[in-house]
Length: 327
Image (cartoon, rainbow, N blue to C red):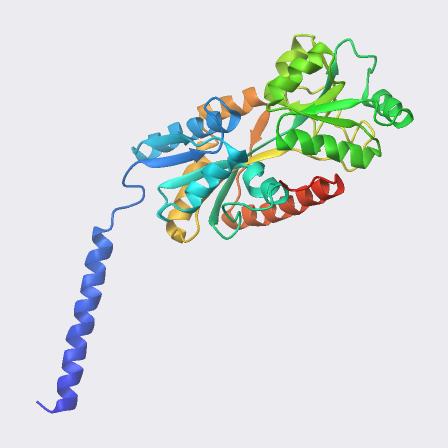
């Protein structure tokens, strides 16, 4: 056999073998998911993010017949959980169920992060959005937001607002900036602790998540003066938005989203996007959103990336204008 013909023959056999091997490997590769998926949550068990993760996990398990384990890695404003997921294998079996805290606020609040909120992750989908409510003690003399702001303008620094989360803090700072008022900030470790002092008269107001504020509003202990997003809250349809109440351009809510480690294969990201999108429509998720005063919100991975970039810029602007120095 001439040498050139021999080489062609060997090449043909080698190519056929390689293609056959690749086809066999592909056929043997298990469909995703083929084992348990871990949802890593940056906050404690019982938190809103934890409740959502568990509701979504039920649906994913039903759809895939694979268990979903919720791993709460609370602490350091979500940095412990975010770092753990960033360093996990990029195979789709470790998913970060998180909020704007880890992926929009932290980079402006801390000098050094143990993770990169953009480079270390692949966006999967948005999961939900919620608003906050501006509340005062039911015994407060302020019947509406206009009255509160009028007093604040005439008496700079005499009113105080509490906050126990980054979302609550930034909501208060944005109010100060857009309404041009000077209100003293009082930090708390959690929103419920701030609510306790608001009920006790130690602070004058706060902007809190609805799951914390609504029960107190409905019990008559707190008075709602405004809702923080562009449209009114489903649980408080008679409460005007803060923008409607006179603070033009005001919009400061919170959001939930899912991310996986950077480098996760696109087909796996697409499958997760599909599973989580369906999960937000499940009975358990609908119950969570109704009780939390939030709503389902799903996106493509690219849409989430663009939304995250815009939110990061917005949070950075508010934090910088507030003069908050990174820790």
